[in-house]
Each structure stands twice: as C-alpha cells, then as structure tokens.
Length: 88
Image 1 (cartoon, rainbow, N blue to C red):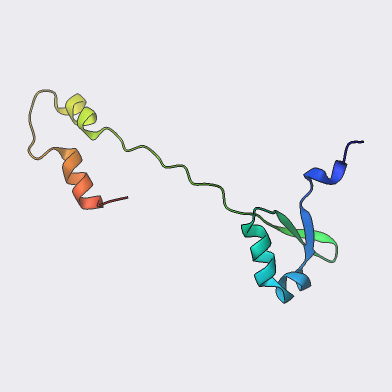
Image 2 (tube, helix red, strand yellow; image 1 turned 180 degrees about the vertical axis):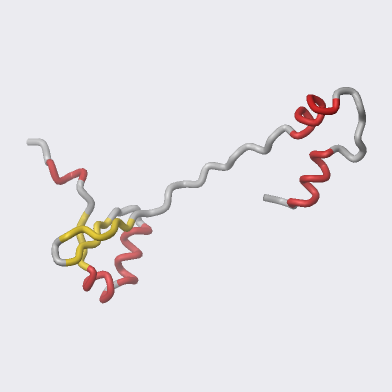
C-alpha cells in the first residue's frame, strides 16, 4: 500500500517548539524537515540548509584579453582582484 503521508514533513506545534527548541533543532540538524503549526494551521517549515554550491572563479585573464587585445597590463587584472578579495 502506498503511504500518502511519507512525503509530508513531521508536524510540531509552536508551543512544542518553544518548549524543546534544542531538541527540535537537533532533529533538523540530523536532516529531518518539520512543519510548525499554530492552531493546526501550518505557519513555517524548519529544514536543514541546502549544501552551498561554490561558484567557479571567472577567467579574468581571458576577459582582459578580449577587452584589451594584445596590450599588456602589469600586474594582471586577475591578480589585482584576487589580491583585493583574498582567499574565499
């Protein structure tokens, strides 16, 4: 038999959340998604954060060559920007 409730998040009341915040956050940290209700109506969803996807660094040398052509700028623009930003 197909379980219709399997896709639904577990439910917790605002009062339970206030009373046991530490335990509720532990459940969320373990990967559980919880629906917070007030007077049986959903008011919020507590879910673990999505994994951040690192954006690739732009190829600033390539961009500089397309804009400036054969002209040489020293130091390279990418090195200037990287020096200003520091480590990511």
